[in-house]
Amino acid sequence: MRRRNEGWTLGYETEMGEMVVATAESALASPLSAELKGKVQLIFTSPPFPLNTKKRYGNLQGESYVKWLAELAPRLVSLLRPDGSIAIELGNAWEPGRPVMSTLALRALLAFQEAGQLNLCQSFVCQNPARLPSPAQWVTVERIRVKDSFTHVWWLSPSDRPKADNRRVLTEYGPRMRKLLSAGEFNSGRRPSEHNISASAFLRDNGGAIPGSVLSFANTSSADRYLRYCREHKLRPHPARMPPGLAEFFVRLLTEPGDLVLDPFAGSNTTGAAAERLGRRWISFEPLDEYVQGSLGRFDTVVRSERSPA
Image 1: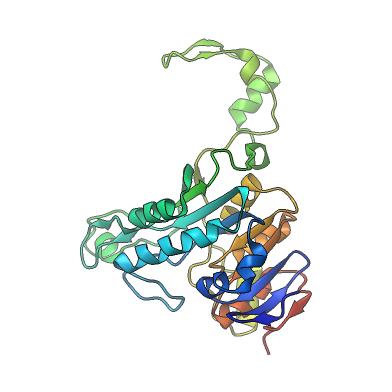
Image 2 (image 1 turned 135 degrees about the horizontal axis):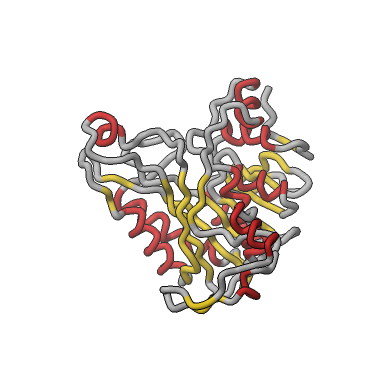
């Protein structure tokens, strides 16, 4: 068990993981980085977005954001196993005071990819259909744009073939597919796309459908255990919480039970909690004590805590 060291302190630990109280930069510059080198299967994270409004959890803007993210890449990549992955969620950015989008998030992603010498394995869109209309000035006041309701998740790896298995994220078959499987009949043959579809390929029950790269999570619950815990202990919830289903999807897809998952920008520690539920080991970094305290509410059992609310 880690207690404290230069640049970080143990916040709490569970049977499967540890919350480290530190910035990503200080943790990666400490001896902790050497302990983790070459052991992490998945880095799944949502770093502070390059928003025009400064937030309490800290967010850089402009070219300083691009430079900051790129400088982290080599240090994060050094922690990965040879077949490990980084999945990074980046939101959209808008030009200050103008109804036009910024390319800042894309430039930051490309700088991160280049600095880490990473391959782009696949890109995902994560839609929040219940997201409030934003940017408000252009969407609800002037009514000249539609609401910005999605983020991108970029799956990167130093390997062409990182560990992954889509059979771990299958979804339920729809009514039409269930009917086809039940009937045992399929309209095989050549399609207008010139694909030649055989019945044998499509009339096999594989336990579910392969999901697409557009994911949808509403993230609207106001009564989940995390928020109840924060209210009960008079703690301010993290304002940019990740949908639990998003973290679970990538933990399932890119890791197996017992693998190590890292979130260097943990916030309310959605990633750590998802890894714990799925039997993966985890370690998370978060510098703000209040958010560390609140994240305790995501776990059934905490083995040791130096950050329990009074």
